[in-house]
Image (cartoon, rainbow over all chains, first blue to last red; front, side):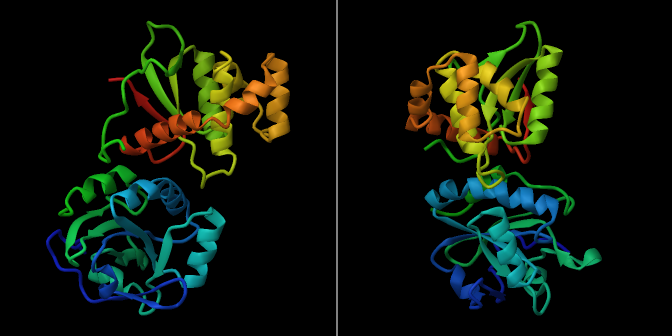
Length: 155
Length: 150
C-alpha cells in the first residue's frame, strides 16, 4: 500500500472524535492539518512518538498547523492513552469500519491489521501537501520531518 | 522564533555546559534528568572521561519532573555547580522532589535562596526550551539523544 501522494485531494472519510462526533474531509478545510497515524495506543514506540510530538505543539500551532493522532483503537482506548501520557493531542478513531480512513490515505499496515506509522499534511484547500511512511511501523519519525513537511504548504 | 526546519545540532556555544579533556571527541548529550537511561549513559560517559556537552531534552509528557529538574540544574549552574548537580541527580534518581533538591544544595554549599529564585527565572526556561527545540530539529526521538560533533 502506497502512502497518499502530495498533490492528491484528500479523500472523503469519516473518523470519530473524542466526543463521538464525526471528523470528515470538511473539517480539513481552512486550516493546515497534520495526521499522525500510529499503530496502537499504549505501545512503546507510539508512546515515545506522541510524547515528543506533544513538545512541538506550540511551534506547530504557531505555523498554523493542527496535529491529530489517528489509530484503529476505539475512542475509549485512545482517550485513556492520552490521559496516561498527559498529552493534549486530539485523537481520532478509525475503529469502525476498521482502518477505512487509513486505507484511503495509504496508511494501513495489512500484515498486522493496524494503522501504519505515517504522517500526512493536508493544506487548507483539502489537498495533501506532504506525506511520509516510515520504513517500518517500529521506526519513529522525528518531529523535524513535520517541520520540513509544513514548508510544502502554500502560505 | 527560530526557523522551524530540520537542522543539525548547533555547534558548541559560549553558554554550553561542557566537560572532559579537550583532546577527546566531542559528544552532544541531549538528556532528561528524570530519565533512567540518561543516567546510565551520562555516568558512563563521565567515568570514561569523555568530552561531553550537556543540553536539555526535557519532555514534560515523559515525566512531570523533567522540566523542573532541568531548571534546577541550570540554577545550580549559576553558582558554578552545574556538573556537580548533574552528577548528584543522575546518581540518585529516587530522590528528585524539591526537598531532595534543597538537600543537594546544602551538600554542595549552594545559596538556597538564590537557587530558588534562579530556577524560576524565565531566561532559564527559555534556555531549556531552546535545547529541546534544537533536539527536535535534529531529529531526536528518544532520551538520551547523542550526537557526535561534526
